[in-house]
Image (cartoon, rainbow over all chains, first blue to last red; front, side, top):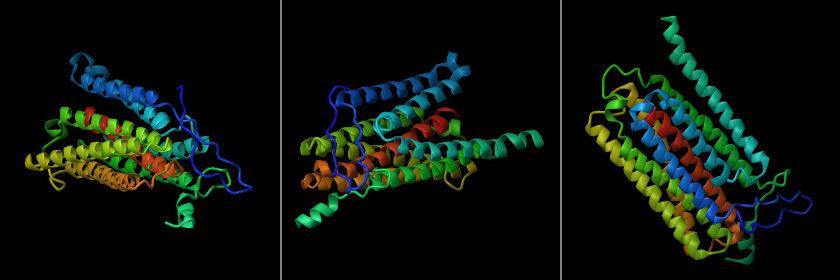
Length: 116
Length: 199
């Protein structure tokens, strides 16, 4: 992360606290993240086709998928460098969504298996 | 464009936190989109094994094809950050190059999706065939609609870049378009794993 992009945008109005623009990563760093993402996608597909890994398929795929998700959110969407307010906003929506998905699956998929 | 109009197009409003209101608003929109796609994904997960007649997911989903389209979408995200970097540095050439790459890769992804949908319909899987078809087409169709919206957005940015109307002062507009594009990408990361790989 040697060279950082210059800040951009006009200054905020007088009397307002100035938002410090995030120090974005260098072009080389973005390329490295892109290559890691491509390798992780290749690993996901390889794991899918390896019979010996069938037992650990779901946890392995979930870990790789979560890793890709985090890389994109932290570096491509700049949450790693940006204001924590944006992270809080995103995590609020994401955690609500995860909570909702989990409960819907429990209520409509797993609970009927025990009640029938 | 008058000097006043030019100033108006680059004037960002700031919230009490000192953060640009566009960006705060857009992150709030992304949070709401998490819930939108969450409902579609959970509907698919609940009902994917409830179909009484085929085709079933393991019979029809094409992993190699979708792996390539996933790779293309991930690389379009890389091109998007490089486009933002080009705009931030004031490089018109780099902005045009990488925005074009985003548009081409986004269009290739949509082409793969159109091919997949046509192939599935040919195999007998329509939105009305079974509950797997209904939940699959609604989920991936809405994602495809988001990608289509993103491609149109990128085309407008490319036109601005070609006309020289995308100076570093307007990088926030490109960053917000990038946030949308990356969000569409992370939704696909989840869809690819949960729908295609974990069957």
